[in-house]
Amino acid sequence: QKVFLAGQIATPGKITFEVIPDLWTIIKEAGGAGELGDLTRVAIIRSKESGGEIIYVNVLEAVAKGEVDKLPQVKKGDTIEVPKMAGGVPGRQLTTDYSNRKNLYYVLGQVLSPGNKPYEGDIDILDAIGNAGGLTSFADLNNVKIISKNGDGTSVLKFSLKEYQENGKARRIKIKPEDTIVIGENKRSVFSWGMIRDFATVAGTVVSFIYLIDRR
Image (cartoon, rainbow, N blue to C red):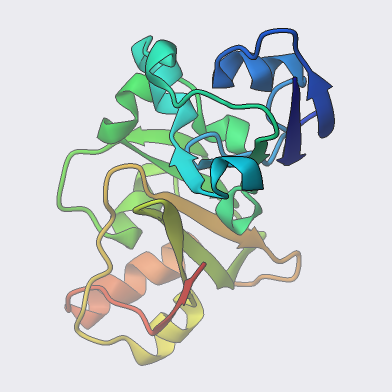
């Protein structure tokens, strides 16, 4: 009985079983998700014979809860597709201790202390960067993203800290549980976390940014 694997999987292509196992076992048999694979949005694409339906599954959550047996049954001819993590963030950095993810957010890229951070409510982007030790000297202030869960997909908020420094508006960008903040790299960057912090202090206003929402 043939099943097909596509996307961010270690060994994409056809895999054959005498008896088709559960979805998680199939993914493991194919070598697991790739470095950029997002196991929270796995698609089961039914074959034409089974109606061609597409089912989205949070495999990571089922594994964390020990509920693999509750995953949808994979049928003969189905295609399992593991999508790419939004923003090109390595998915494995976000999967550790999934059971606690709802109380965490993540700061990756050009900060002094990247990784997961405890979510304590009512924090904005500058608070989050400060909690990650501030920006490195290589941070690209024009390349900042906040990746948020949005139903079966994600929303990617792109904005510029440099524009905020020059044209700050009275609106905060708040961080939500499970958000991922990615600070890009610019080797020629001359700005620093201290400059942004000092500007916010002098301005004496609520933090906000000019931003562009890019939904994928």
